[in-house]
Image 1 (cartoon, rainbow, N blue to C red):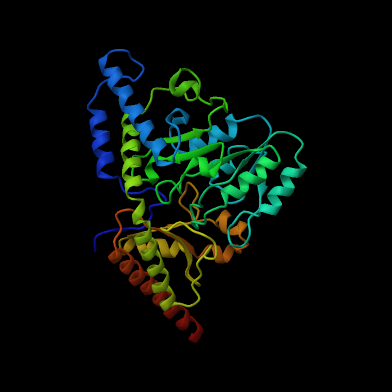
Image 2: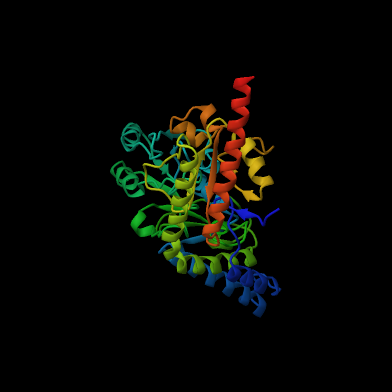
Length: 375
């Protein structure tokens, strides 16, 4: 058994050493950030330093950053806490956005995975009340990067607000909230090398949002509850490291492209979803013709390679991806798709290992199919 090759960084990425050190330091301090004594003030300082670092990662004002329990809570806070009225959510959003408001209207996407801007314009033109549009910066399954600037331009023409789930984009590509123009931007620590269980919502200055957790004055009364000081400190350290590491995206994109080329040398029928659109440098959604994702995941796991399917329910059973379905991919084909997502600590040999295992799985499946045809 070889050492494990981890290629599931869109699910959660490797904890950065500086983030681990920040978590350890915070855990060694006994103090509630709401207390006025010295230890309380030290805990408060850790939170505010982290707020500065997270804000800097996305070009925001630290006063606009609200810490949450993760990206899911940040999305829920935006979709539930913003102005009353209709919600328009792209059909490829993360479940935490799709399920936050049951009455939300879905905005379709093209086969490329890009949002249908004409459809969005028509939907907003027909809206009769206040509107919030929610479109992610980059898709967690395909890596497709959405034209948020165009979304904002259309929304502004109809006096609508915009929420952008930037959980997958933050730390992988440069993100500037002012350039995006969105009113609410969601982030998550464990996607950039920080600890799990902490995220943030950036709220544009001058906008109000209703707290969804009540019972305290924390986070400017927008998110009650004792702050996760250790998690927030780790988030801040990870944000600093991710910002310093953004230049490595070109090398990661080269590894991604080498992976795709390696697979296509083995099978010209393998399909990469969203390939015609701008994509994250680290993400590949890839089919293996005739082999279900469930079988692939088990075989990769046995070979010590960690990848994922596009969508899984709580039981772990692989289900058709709602993202691929929205792109017009039929259910049977989408069930052969897996996601490979590279991270800050991957090296070229990890890609070579993946291609080797992919080829082995595919060859065994082809051999079985040939025997079945002969039989």
